Length: 91
Image 1 (tube, rainbow, N blue to C red):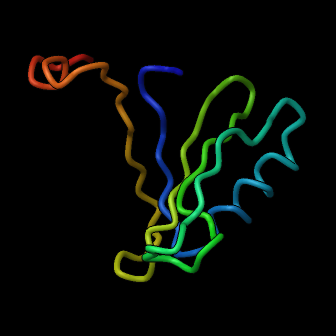
Image 2: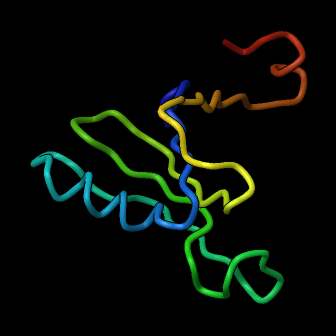
């Protein structure tokens, strides 16, 4: 896993977006996909979040629901090993 991963927020079409992005770039693939279970908050079996890769660059996609609308903004997921790393700034 890379240290910093671009994080894309969708209303309810993260799976469709991952499939689209990986279909137009040759060297790409969908990785881990997490789905909602009985507890929700999304419909059981629908995608909660997923990881996909394009030309070696990993991205994360999240179905955030209608509370926050899709924008052209981007977030970054920073992978830290421990709580202490977070306090000290693992980046």
